[in-house]
Length: 217
Image 1 (cartoon, rainbow, N blue to C red):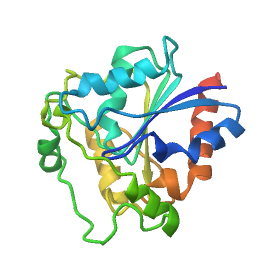
Image 2 (cartoon, rainbow, N blue to C red):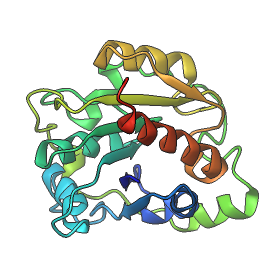
Image 3 (cartoon, helix red, strand yellow):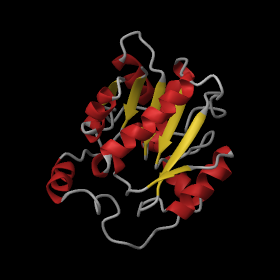
Image 4 (cartoon, helix red, strand yellow):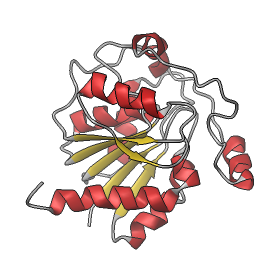
């Protein structure tokens, strides 16, 4: 069994993971989806990381998972506490001192030019609820340099979504390779994979957990 810390993306909330959590439970894991302080104007990046650490009340997650903008927070958690594995799901990868508004240019972001980059493959009623739950990103973190000098030593995997209209598969492969020297893992689904394919995503996360237990890894 593994313990997962699940970190949502920009404008999201812990609710984004509400379909994944029971699927992970079915695999025998424990997971906590965390609400980041993205509506608190004074919150910086370390406040985001501390929200995750505090949610575990002195315990430590085995695997930290960051979705989308959660890629800025997840490695900070790994710098705060020992973690066995960091998983980035359709995520943004920052570098030392980089601000969010700089990131788009630095990584050569390529807009797909398609409509509905977030919810195109999410069931309509679920997509409508997700949109009604979107939160404003008002925090200081969005204007603050990313605070680590280097990526943490935590083993890291990047999982891209082949049907992602926000971070397209070709761009995401290059992003993982250029930023972390990683060959991305892949699965079908769009950007909001937590809502469109929660069972398949949970299976992938379970496989990562199994890899931690495999003495051959």
